Image (cartoon, rainbow, N blue to C red; front, side, top):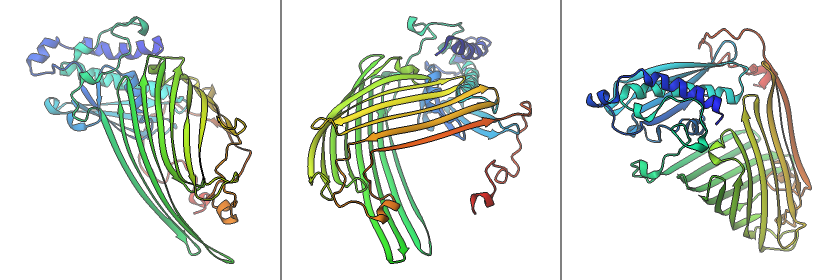
Length: 444
């Protein structure tokens, strides 16, 4: 974290705490004795980047369950008349702090970059939490200080909350289940899609475990001149990741997966790949800058739906890959680039090389440019069906076709001018003035 930014956030929070009465008086009146307050973050709208705020504000316990929170933060946002964004931060005390209420506003300009908005929101959150801490007996967790060097330790150094510091009956496990269904069509076409996901994660300062399961079922019927085309297929995937932090820069782990992909002619695929990663910057700086090298190698077994162009119905092949990724989030904007390459060990000519990048750059206040692009050179499609792809499957993109490359490019710019001092928020006719094109432009 840049010293100047950390100083501004910490100084703003801690001057409020310095005005409070002695902590012993608060505890005598029934205040807190825990070292840090439990904070539940509830966000609706833009910039609900809880990971960024957890990284920047490390002197509280961020909890997933509202019932165990000391204070509940509700953050919402609305567009201002000048094109900016107004964020409202409401804080509600729970349990022994029931009755505590506080509200504050932060306004971002329409010309602010993502980094400037996130830093401003972090500053506002820190001030609100500082007020709560000073009034509720948690003032021992903060001290007033100037710029510091995190590598030298001290009160301002970045730290993570360890498992031993929290009482968690779930042992830091978090589960999520999602399901959705979509039905649409017209007189000559109908489509039904069903999707579900189930995930389980456990993250500690040294371990990261992610278990993910996905299933989809798609049915399509289209009336053509020579009859009705009908297609129904079910795909699924199950993946697992276990990673261990060796140091501030090194991590090791393993990935495994099992799946069915009719689009890729694979009735069943299973693979396991041990992996290692090196980060040139400490991992706790990843929300703002990151440069990593990721390598993995391992075997994969495939059972095909149809015979492949290489005459195989099933096979086991070893493959390896290397990926280099650089990303930056700075006051001038965001940028990132990724380079990756992979190949099969039995035939190095069967390879895949890809490059992608993005940039959002503010030239001057009110004028910014952005670009996103990717290109991939493909020569590893060993799963292609020898029977080829029908015209209907190609048009609906139901089966993968042979290709030597694929690419994509997006260029854009933004110009904003006019007053930046109109901070009025007017919620009337929000649906009619959302900023999108009128219905006749959208084709409705």
